[in-house]
Length: 360
Image 1 (cartoon, rainbow, N blue to C red):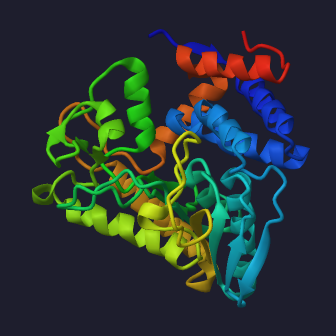
Image 2 (image 1 turned 90 degrees about the vertical axis):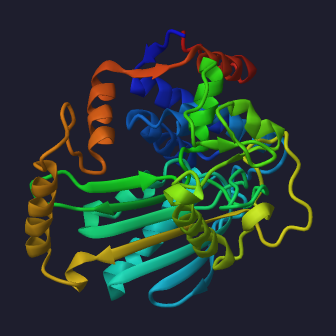
């Protein structure tokens, strides 16, 4: 399927208009659009503007509050718990990260747990907010249960991503942003749109047997934790996903495990919820709370250069986490953001519904 390329500014203004059409304040609409399009710029197409219609559908069924009263419900000098009031995570998570950064400025580190939120886009955006303050940033979220723990045929965890952003000196920052599964759910959505099979080791069917059919997710199958199966270390991916679930939800008062609400609006909410909405966890650590900033950055540059210059296998190069995304962003700001036909069709339907200018 041939993709069509669109300018970032055009897509950004379109997303802002859609968010305002569902009653977002302009400030929140612009922030939500910025976070959403950050995914497309960085090459994480599964979490970008392709999800815009999904947020609209959540609003339609009353699961997304366009004008939330985001507030701190518990606090110490270095920690806080935030109630997102069913707001979109694209707005709630940056609010939480700003609080974490302010607390880090005061006492060295800040840690914020969030409940009653929704999908927050790419974790890397929120972690990277700390970089401008000479801080290390961390962000994670739980997600709807589509992942089977090692040896289970029940879906109990989400893809539960983790991001860590670390500033450097002359080198670009280290930015790790990854799901705790073999692949993010959005990659399966892309495979389905393109009519392709999944690589071996990504999925199991309803009976726990390996499969490569992306449709299996809708037939009782499950994604596998990072590592694929036990012999390849899936118990470690299971542990990572469980850690995220506990920090984001058990700690904050959000729903966890099989009670996390689905992103798609057509699926029913889990019965007997154990918390409110989905959960996030943000952290910011001041580098000078540990050592002088310049010393750290000098050694971070040295670390990056040594790893990047590592002797590699033929035809390959050792990359630093964040390199591919940074290169994608530079290119896509120059040449535009490619969208698949199905995504364009979704956006055109939004344009027609809200009487907005067509992208085409």
